[in-house]
Length: 384
Image 1 (cartoon, rainbow, N blue to C red):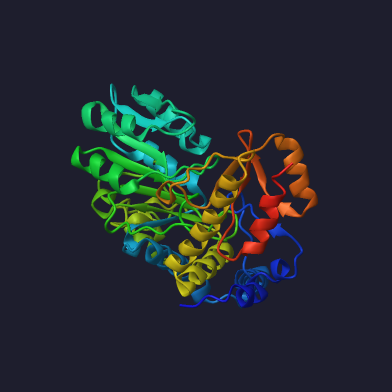
Image 2 (tube, helix red, strand yellow):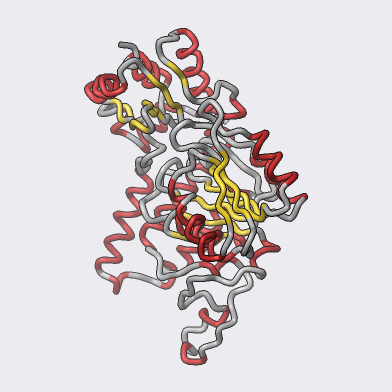
């Protein structure tokens, strides 16, 4: 399809089209499209006066959100558990997967803490080892990772972020997942910095648990997210956190006192509700926007913006691009080191460029609705 970026901005992000700011910080918090803001306003008014709520405003809201997430991943909605953030999904994996004394949970240095601390604590409690492979020249050593997967029989779980929050490095999920699957190793992915600027088909990519908050690249409210659990794995995992709706009997509101502890046979067994109906309805609107435009159209636009940044860094050696040049090893996170990072950050701030400093780098994270002119203006401000 032809994507008219200016018409889209005028409709969904009028502040961007009016030049109020150059927003390049989607790796931190995504702005809300106008349709999502409208949904929050309309649903919020009904929530404030709950006699206006109908049955369709309750559990069908969660079904819409679950279905939208499933469509983004090309999986069945039964494999999707709605959760408040990525950490919730990582904790599900760390606490429910079967591993124990002498086993290894394998990861790499440079991971975001949300994909480290749950594993450290869970491994310690079980007598397992949480191992972080060292970076090589500031990047993950995928060869060392694959060697450990293929040769160390103690490795029972591999836990990785699809895309690095600070460097923008992107793992090859298909290759790593295939190596794990061949050896019966569980593969857990923190997807929050990847999904949106990238697409994935989990029906054909060997991942066991895929946790994703939606408040960043998926342009949804805080407190919304989802976790995919491979269908064949669902029945093998018993939730550590139990909600009143985790059980198959929970849909019968006339028989609460029967207390049947049999879990749902789908990923709803991992949901601890009541979740925020207003914001999950808004999440469904935002994910619907991705599905309407086309996830691949969005990914292609993000890639072209990243290509532009790569070309800029190549032409200006005084600006060091930390993010890999190879398109297969990057997504939307672009990390730069300049001669004076604090001074560069101040120039960007004065230029109304919303950005972040992470691990001594300027991090720019443009999305599909950003324009070439916006990115070029930000890149010029990297020059001292």
